[in-house]
Image 1 (cartoon, one colour):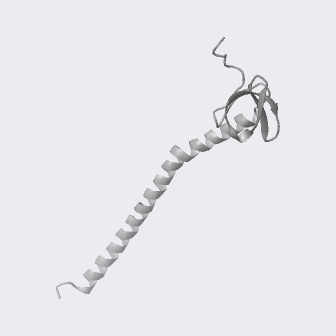
Image 2 (image 1 turned 60 degrees about the vertical axis):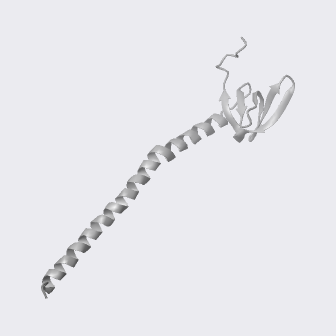
Image 3 (image 1 turned 180 degrees about the horizontal axis):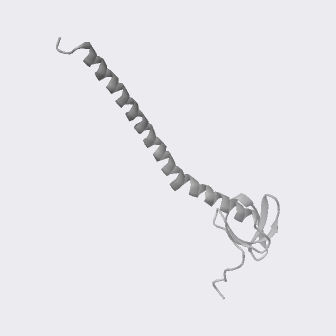
Length: 113
């Protein structure tokens, strides 16, 4: 009665365009959050994993290593997937390379010297 059909049509048209803009803004927020997660969490973790793989691949005889179980020893033999680690005088254990957490190439001095 008070609203003309032309006024009602114009109102519904402007609401539809506002809905599209809000949808794009809403999706843009998810994209922004995804980028933040990628650059702050995922990418640095991938870099650390690549550096650790390179460290494990470069293990050689005479290196001091730490296993995931906390065993510290000196590498006496290197194979494809295993290393032999001397953990005490005359005590050697075979360890899977993937379980090595740290490798010291002999640059550090022993604590008792």
